[in-house]
Image (cartoon, rainbow, N blue to C red; front, side, top):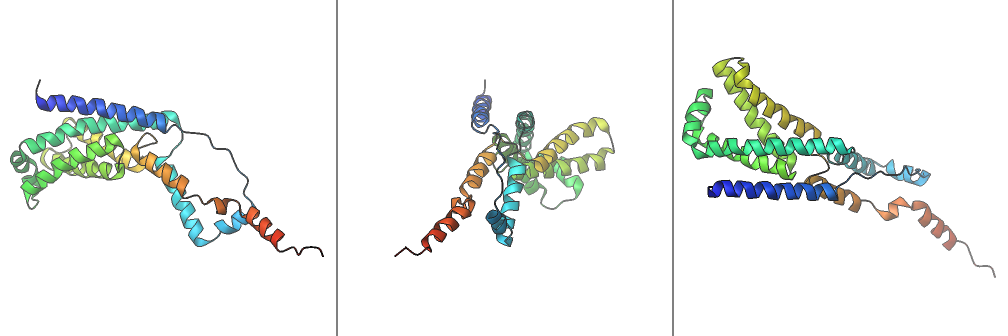
Length: 224
């Protein structure tokens, strides 16, 4: 058993542990509906508050989606694509000159050897970002970019050959789906955003009626 294989096995067990840990910490919780007070609607009507609320809702819908099965499905998709794409990146970096000659030069792109290194590192780093769910949109974008170029290369050199395109299309479709849908709750991104959303809530803004009531009591003159 080689050192590289031992490191890959260790990385697999470590990734599985992290995934289970995120699974336990970021379980979806049901939120009760809270009636909106008139004062809160006035505060939310301001442009700055509306932009902040829209950004918060966008982050929640992208990273903090509800549904246990949906989040487990996204986790499985991240782990499957990331674990398999790592090997493609390692193969490219194992012999970058050969990859440049066979895949980059036919596309007539400049600096083929440099682009070979870019493709290899993009697949390795992008795969790890997807596996851990850390900066996952960047990881999904990196894999989507490399698979798009790979699909173009196969079509250019072999035409619409299904046996050549099927694996590339599967990787391209999976990484593009993760880019559009997000990594799900069981990711580091979801844990970070959940903390930021909770910290961004201003307790004073949540109960303006209480402060208004207190100030109205302060304005009442004492009886002589």
